[in-house]
Image 1 (cartoon, helix red, strand yellow):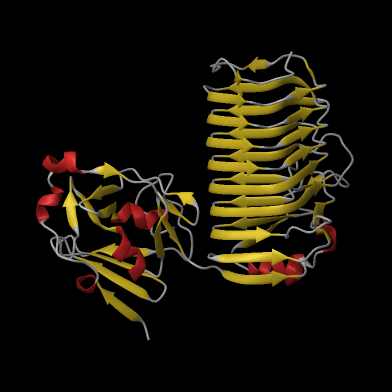
Image 2 (cartoon, rainbow, N blue to C red):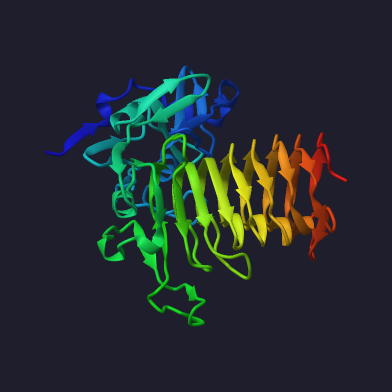
Length: 410
């Protein structure tokens, strides 16, 4: 039976005067994280008289909720919150997630309009929806994920779903050996629209790439084994890991190999498209094709304690993206590249404490075009590289990358 939680049981009564802008002096903005990722909304999350107040509609969308307008927060991810306004214009908002329902009525139980936006106290709202709320200097919201252990690529891709953590058994896995007919999952697409070098055609049915799509709050880990798990594709134009329209994804440990002879290829080790809040941790991105990491129209992507090696187009390609960071990473042995780092219409890119950028060769170290901004190398070490130039520029150039306390760059 569906459990219905009414807002009147959630909160203490608040004065409607909170909605007045005259009280701005009593407010401070609050940082809130969800499963470790910071929640960024158009309107601020505010602390007022001991409670954290959230703009409810935007908060719902940040959880993958129903979409009202196109924005960074608007991906219609299945399994997310559903919410609807009362048709009578009363401003009552009904929020549903799985078997839980909350009804928020302005003027009652703490819910109030502020400058036309419905706010409500965060803790009772989140806990009523089944979330855990903790204070650790910031407000941390979390909830347990379904645990799955997979022993094959088929089991892994069939387990992909929201609110899920998948642990892949140690081993070596190739997409050439995967039984495509065994994949039955709306969150996974087997994409045959891949160029087949054997025939010179697309859609031959002989080559493919797997796309994880439209999913949120997913973790995939291969475990911290003495011998890292290796996942490879044998096809020059296929990606190893590809995510589209996803949010709050963690990919942890292992080797992703674009396992073909170096040359003219278009496949990447990790490709992200229309994604937000992505953590890539302790990976080895070993490409002999295009890039180790490619992000298109993404925001808040982090590559941490990882290695990018043996790529021939470049190490990283970023298009139409924002807030990208590489921390404590090694970039090595990427030779004959166009550019080691390609940045197009992208802002706020930071490579910091990357202690070994070495053995690489490229026309330029950084190519920043179409108004890219704030590309920074911070405390990085360069060694035995061969770059035709440091900053390459396209039209409407940003002026190139900035180097802060870096060593070995000449």
